[in-house]
Image (cartoon, rainbow, N blue to C red; front, side):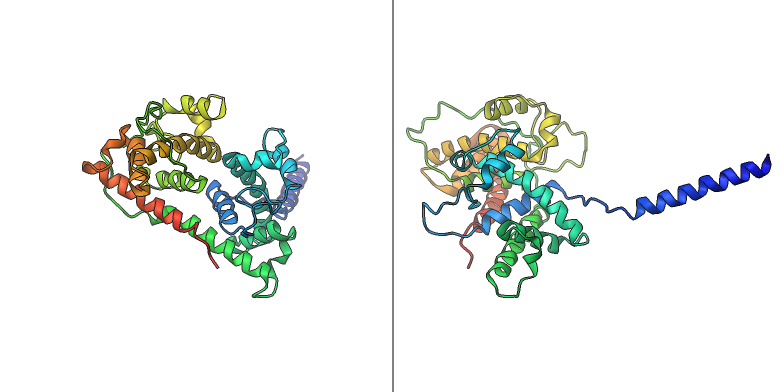
Length: 323
């Protein structure tokens, strides 16, 4: 009896060792963060070739071939296929779709690169430009190589930005109290602003968000939003109410909703500032933090709005042409 028990135990141990070895040799799917994917998508936008031709057959700020758009949108937009014109007209939706596409690509290239972040980004950029990730090692000074290095440079700037926040003074309010945009603004005309300006403001608000060092601080997402704003804003901007937890779970969705809200706010503040971009951004930041854009240059709120303006300018500088 004892002999049988020993043999069974040995068999079990041997089976365990074999299974462990087998599992250990399986390829592990690389984990990439939302911040990495968002940085890559923004880098692809910033590095997109500019043809200086309005009807160049490419669509959106990312300069995408039209044949890719129906397939990608069907895959990443709840099965809804978009035309190239629809894709171009909805920059927030376009970004969300591209985040969905490039997340899978970046994961694959992380595996192929042995979890080397720089090589993974280069491979993903090569896939984006040529359809073949292996072209990332093209000869130096070739067009593809120059483009890939440009994407990597933009990516590294984007990915480092959260760590550049050095200001220690926080605004008096530790929470975002933003109400609805004031639909009855006294401005007689709405100033035209670009998607790039709105995106820069949204990113600046994220970077300047007060950090409470308290996981259960009652605020949601990287933007530190009060929960009562989330159902209303999500209903307003995507036709569907989200709970605070749903909002926090998807940074891409949160970013899109905040861009929708702040696009209207920034337009209003452009009008109120006499089309002064810096003042408009400070007024929008004051609205975001206190609910009152007129507080932008008062007391410690002014320190916060200056911080937002600084991050905004950093993001805007990255949109300038690079040769």
